[in-house]
Image 1 (spheres, helix red, strand yellow):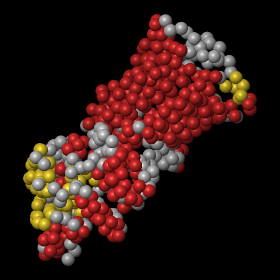
Image 2 (spheres, chains in turn red, brown; image 1 turned 60 degrees about the vertical axis):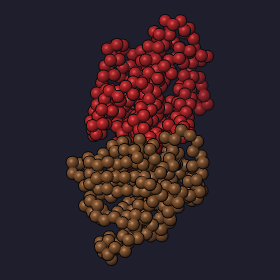
Image 3 (cartoon, one colour; image 1 turned 45 degrees about the vertical axis):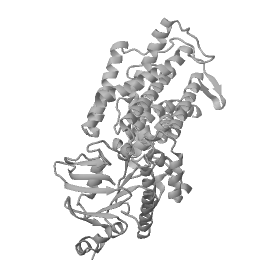
Image 4 (tube, helix red, strand yellow; image 1 turned 30 degrees about the horizontal axis):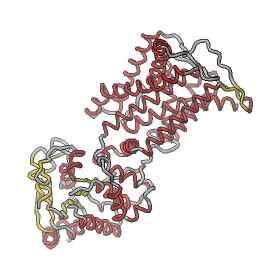
Length: 304
Length: 234
């Protein structure tokens, strides 16, 4: 039981990173981004390209850090992949969503076009890499360590939670302390008034895609380190991501953080009584329940 | 000296013109009140001056510069600030952050200006770390005006600042508006509360059905029988 909760926190922290991106995009760009899962997949595979092709070619040695399953290569891949997916988010906004926004397209049109983007990204990855499961370091032994209460955990998993904490704290500081971060919150609150105050809301939208994309890439890489890579991995995260964002009150970053942890823990706990293949159904049921009982989420949306 | 001149403005949200050749002028250090029944186009006029709506006809000049058709963020840089009637604060941001957002396009040090705002609205200083969404209507209105004033504008456009406020607060807000005016800011104010608005106005305009009906100094309009009968409640 305690072990399942710990695994739930690991999975939940990955879900949280993705859900924060969904909730920021929803709150500021005002669209449901169905391609967010594919941003995770893209992040994971770009890191695979960096770790498996580019860095060996550059002669970066294949080290590992102590008990972790990865080393310098992965550490370099992190910022590279986060930046790449950040630009990918901005690219698709410029290519599609911005044009639709300027035409005052409604929410459904925007959501459907993001669904199209998700297919495009997933299929490109599938064509390049094929449908097989992949690992950053195939065949590596990943021994678990024992914590009190009989909890078995791999050092990688501790790293995952730690990195998520660091990223969330950085995002928190950005949103609370910097001029751009405050302008992002202001735009989420009241786009009209932000415009009236002279804030370039289109620039804010770009920042939002960049941050959402970067966090999604990190989530994808962390999941890849913890489990494995697959072209459909992000798609399978879509329901947990939206369930987490809605649970926390869509538009509310801190809600998405908590929502992600709740969904992750609930999914893992369910494996005590259900087959692991039902995990997704658990996330879906939570989403349905919250929409029935408290559609504004447990933290009541973006405090309007 | 004339600060703002809107000349023969026609504008609307759809193809239908709500404003039909409306003209107003604001001279330096003046308070100009624009009154008229619901649907007269008063708010539309402010939105058009601030560039939220594009006029189909007519010209808007600020000092001697033609600002017709400029976007709001450009107009804000030229020296006009605008306070919308509703949702005029950022509710999840603190008072302090609301003021900072008002100064978003300033690249200089605006701490002095912020201090002036807190001197003008002392209640806001006490509550500066509270979220604007938790404030009362009157305090919100002060935050909204403070936000707009952070750019040190020469002209402030106020859309119904007394709407939805308790009578006691209405006079407080009007006093604050007079205080703002004393700091050298010209003010154009749109009001349902015509009597109060005309009392403090140097000049007043009466709009109806999107057209200029009357304009005179504030006191003469208050004494005008037609205005009294139609808009001041007898």
